[in-house]
Image (cartoon, rainbow, N blue to C red; front, side):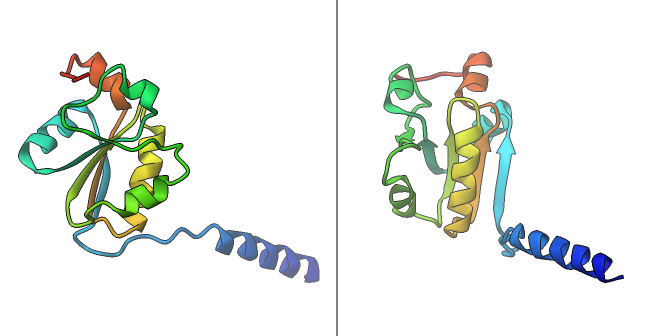
Length: 133
């Protein structure tokens, strides 16, 4: 019985450390959108388009009007914090991993609406969507 109690207590201790705080605002939105949904949402809703790729990646082309913030920059979190959290933010990277992490950071910073481009710039280019140099 004592061993069972110790195992249960250990399990609960580990699980409590894994609890992730969720935004409970009923108007909060953080979601992945496919290329078509992302493009349509950008067209329908004014906001900030954020490219979190490296400068080398951006030099190959970006979504028109996108603001650039290198995910790997030492001051990336400070740059994110400087964004207007009341605006809708559309974030993307090369494949969707960094932008997904950026979406979570922005959500935790109080941004109300954040959309991530599922598949990133690779999916955007694959769908033959326009880019600017």
